[in-house]
Amino acid sequence: MSENTNLETMRHSLSHIMAAAVKNLYSGTTTTVKFGVGPAVENGFYYDIDFGETKVTEDDLKKIEKEMHKIVNRAEKFVCREASREEALEWAKANGQDYKAELIAEIPEGEKITFYAMGGFEDLCRGPHVEDTSKVGAFKLMRISGAYWKGDEKREQMSRIYGAAFETQEELDAYLARLEEAKKRDHRKLGKELDLFCFSDLVGQGLPLFSPRGTVLRDKLADYSLSLRGREGFEKVWTPHITKTDLYKASGHYAKFGDELFMVHSQVNGEQFALKPMNCPHHAQIFASRPRTYRDMPVRYMEATTDYRDEKTGELGGLSRVRCLTQDDSHVFCRNEQIKGEVERLVGIVRELYSLVGMSKLRARLSYRNDEDKYLGDKELWKMAQEQIKMAAIDNNLEYFEAEGEAAFYGPKIDFMAEDAMGREHQLATIQLDFVQPERFGLTYVNEKGEKERPVMIHHATLGSIERFMSVFIEHTAGWFPFWCAPEQIRILTINDAVEDYVAKIEAILKDITLETPLRHNDIRYRVDRRNESLGKKIREATKMKIPCILIVGPKDVEAETVSVRLHESEDTVKLADLAEYIKNLK
Image (cartoon, rainbow, N blue to C red):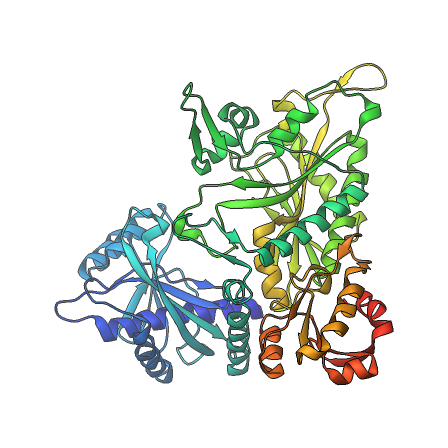
């Protein structure tokens, strides 16, 4: 048994131990605690439990955990037994386990039905489990939340208790320390503290509002993404935010994602429109708007535009999942023989951007189709496309892994998994091959022989959803943004009014600087704090706002023609004559 399999077994065994502890504490002569499912998950386990009329909160977790330790210390054996369907259903009925009866009824004919018992607790389960309860490693109950039975919001709401579990206490402690650090870096917390974005009940859930500071950050990130692609021959286009639903019916999106559309009705003639959820069908219409020949190929479009998707309110969270997402979207229309070169171009863009933002450790997930009927297009085309993206990954020396069932409905893709400063992976950039939409929209170009051919469509987003990328980037940097994209790059702190003339000289220098950054014409963003407050208070406030460069100006600086500089992790003194060059070299 591999180490990972062993850990998964330990975690699954802990879910049973937790269920036993809950039964010991909450089942009585008038109360039956009903159990749903209790799987092992990444970093731990959970169990969905129906407590009936009993209210259980996070304050009760310590009590449950204490009872679990009692069971662990008794080293109770896990014992497996097989049962017929009739015996299993009788067990569920006798124990008042309605959810288990439903699961038993769904077990296919001929499949073995097993129960695992330890101590006085028995549960329906496929297993496996550890030998006895003492062999489950280190654990801690983390939180309790609501969960619908089988994820169906029309079904019963249960309590889901989560626990963390690792083989050793040291590993558990390290995980808990990472969680504490993650709380400090939570983009929702930092977004408020750094005045980047907010939400309003009057505007609606999942619809973020960006302050001036947050708007600078998102604009700089989007502009950099666009500038990289502009350098590689992409041209900007613009598309409207509403469209007739006919467009998405033609592309195939309506049948797949119709329930995610925000619908808009014309009050003039009753026409039905939708707020656009994606941009590829629009870009296809621009390509189709005039005749194309092989000399035009490839055609490359890009756009940073907001799309809208009617996400369930329970799935919304900060900037990670929103109802309006701004895509740094692009589409290439090319010939088959141009796919390799275009993919290489896009891989280069991805690598350059993620290297600059400090997330250069990338893995590529090659997302393929499976045998489900949710995919459009000929299987032979899919096979060819999947072979091409695999060759592209190999040719570009990408660290990759393959994942069936993760493809877009119209084609396979390369999803880039970027690692942040906390060691967490996030799926961000993507490159997708599409043979379906060109077919559905009848896109053609004229080849060298004067014959019409079908182009290939390549979808690409470098940041992906800019809102989601910002949620990752804020947590990755802990709010200490690189100098080039920081909303406020410099704050000048004055000690008293006697330095005003000297501050004017500093401002003149700052206004004359054009930084050599990813954005060629990037003027310095600064402000002067002239308040009649102590210098210590001004420094604390500037540091709390995570200003990357603080310039302190006092009478001694005026006399020596210097500026005192405080950076995130260092201090310096710079001659006024050298200040421009010093700032140009800040990262």
